[in-house]
Amino acid sequence: MTPFSLTNVERLEAAAGELDVPFEMDEDTFRAFYERTARPLWAYLARITGDRQAADDLLQECYYRLLRANAVHDDETHRRHYLFKIATNLARDGYRRKAAAPELAAASSDVEPADPVSTGRAEARLDLTRAMGQLKRREREMLWLAYAQGSTHAEIGAALGLKTGSIKPLLFRARQKLAGLLRGEKQGGRHA
View (spheres, rainbow, N blue to C red):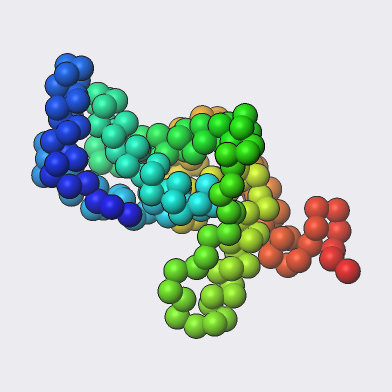
């Protein structure tokens, strides 16, 4: 995860100046926002894409698009959720490109756990990673936003483009499916 350098911010300002797109945030505000959101955003991207390298690339694109969006945000929470919506859309675009050109989709779906404290914990994280990899993309997105990011149903709905009322049953089914995968169940029954 490479943080924005001053030169990157200056390049973005120059690009926005060429397009007459003003930035909503000054440099110090942006830096502080980036410091608070980059790590959780990267973790979300790595989890839903299954590819750390893609997460690195998408992370920078998310911030670039946030700055170029010229959107007015009520507060930092609203800005943060808008950033996660951008991330979700970019990841989905990546899935579409891979589906259109499967020969380019050589990315691994295994995201190795980062520096586990113990072997048991490492195995549990690997089991969770494998189980999450077996879920549908939208299920992974919902579970991550709900439990890793602590987003409300309304925030999840806004980020994923779903009705707020549908989040609770969809999230319930995703949790049930994940629990079954972690217990070793297959879609139609148990492993032998």
